[in-house]
Amino acid sequence: MLKLKALPKGEITPITLSVIVPLYNETEVLPSLHSRLTMVLDSLPERCEIVYVDDGSVDGSHQMAQALPASSSEHLCLSLSRNFGKEAAMSAGLSYARGQSVILLDADLQDPPELIPEMLAKWREGYDVVNMQRRRRLGESWFKRTSAAAYYRILNWLSEMPIPENVGDFRLLSRQVVDQINALPERNRYMKGLFAWPGFRQITLQFDRDPRQAGDTKWNYTKLIGLAMDGITAFSIRPLRLATWAGLTVATSAFLYGAWVVAKTLIWGESVAGYPSLMVAILALGGVQLLAMGLLGEYLGRVYIEAKARPNYLVGEVTEHPRQSIRAAQEAQQ
Image 1 (cartoon, rainbow, N blue to C red):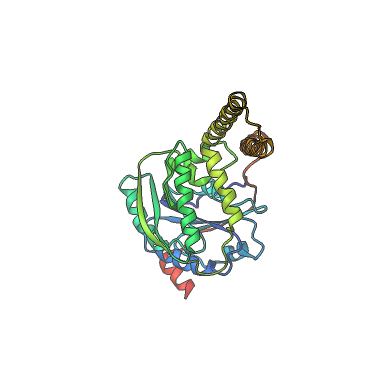
Image 2 (cartoon, one colour):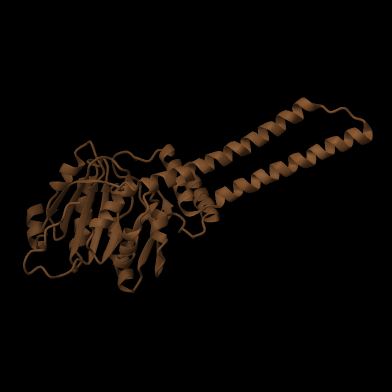
């Protein structure tokens, strides 16, 4: 990993807030995001920094992030060596963030930066985690809202640890929580679960999530299903137990059915109509076996990845821009 340069002489004020913004092909929305975000941070009396993490964009997002106008906040631009995925990009941002509090913010402006002062106020009250729960999800289809609600219910039913429903990556974490997450050695990272895992003092605020301002979403249903599987397998082994119970149920049913067929033949002398019942039994048993094998494969694949111990990401370039005074930043923007 690249080392950051030391603070300039006389710069002894610690960074109060770091805002991490993962980027992947976001040139259409990045200027608007930066403008709104810096306007909010400029209004805060504390020292802040913005950490842009480019996750292998191919549309020049990293170059645009480097050339964004200066503000009263320090800008740190990380460029990953390739596309590692959003979970890895957030992990990289958490590793480089230096603030006493850290906020994760999507670049698509669905999560309003204007809520940052309210989140920071709750942190000052002593909360270590400020969860931002979506009260309404504007611009999303009925199917997506319904499937998301069903997923969170299934996840919390299967998981041994409660994960806040309808809470995305937009949240505030204290330095204590960030340090605990950074210390975790696991490679298969489901960040929504990891944010909830440390515990500590938490509060949930509700907000209306805006439609995406520009560009296209990078999350199709295939990726969302994969993320859902990561969440379930990362925080629960209950699916394996359910597969065991399903196998036991099918085996017991097959045994009882076989006993009934034998008894019926011996007592009433009825002939056995074998083909339909045999096919049903074979297909049912084969389906349960394939399901159990698939679940075992999911867990075994994650063990395999953990055993290789490869890093979650590789940083190709780090660029740091010092902050300006609010007045100088405003003049530069004009």
